[in-house]
Length: 434
Image 1: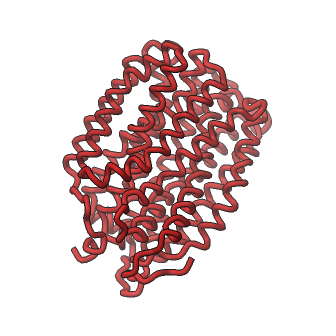
Image 2 (image 1 turned 180 degrees about the horizontal axis):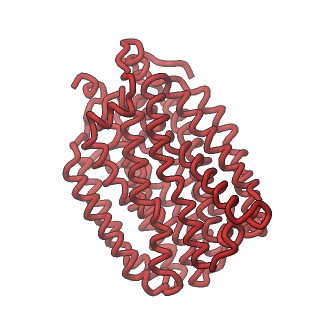
Image 3 (image 1 turned 30 degrees about the vertical axis):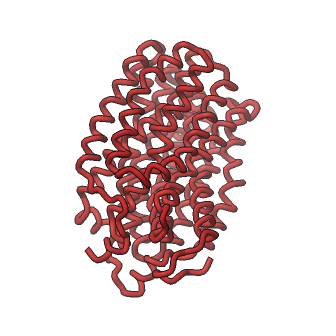
């Protein structure tokens, strides 16, 4: 892909290629995260923590899962620095290389009985850290490229929504990985190693992406900052914090309805096939959130869309848990579709749209990236572990604990939405002149 004049609207072909490139990268990155989440619930308690009670082993496994979240924030700072100072393309490629390598190495990790009860958890935590570190550069890179190439397009919000479209695809593939024979013994290793099949072509695709025309203009005029990841936090700390609090709701919903749910449904006696079906249905509706957000964004103010979506999702949380406890498959699939569509799908596509409109070009990689990865830490890092420790084997507690957490995150997110700058129909090029 050749670079384009900053005043020329990129063709539809270029936008499609960019969307595919962004989606391909997130597909492998979130596939690895989802498989890790399943392994933390079904495999690691026995393999890595065999010397502790099973319930404690599950909590510890989810805590190793949490290690990737502070790493995501660090990754957002590091890749945001290089993405806003040197090259969007280079930063966007290397974040995937690191995540892909860490993912494959997890699939080769020996059990605690072979390398020791202390060594195994330490190595697993380190690999999880590097997984998160790589993913930390993803959101900012995809958001910057799609927003800047699509800056002059009528349906900019639709295209920017693809910054997160790889999440549902990777999640669906991760759910299907549960069907690999003997998943809890050797199949999980195959699942991690299979990620390379997606990672290698995705890395090649990233490598051939052109720099965005708006960023090339910033480079030409020598307007880049010496330390953009630090400077953006000094100058735009308010939108970074507010965006983080807003997106924390979507992160909580995602890691509840698409990660912790594996543990809860397993406790409730659902078969692996039914769990997989439920997760795949959720991911289909997650992906449908991209075009739906693109439609809503044409008619709604950003603040209005955010608040309506959050309220609907919160209202759905009680019947969602009720459906799981009822073990009525039709009810479960219906509620899974609805809560994932509103709370994950639409908000997944919405997050990069509003975030990209809060920062000028010289901070558009680091600003959204730091905000979003902070949101992931607030809303997702400890969600599975906290829910597991509160609910444990008393599954009826989920009926009030899970909706209660939804309500808390919703209040915080709505306050953040009310305080954020309204940016519908804003001209991104004008942000550079403010």
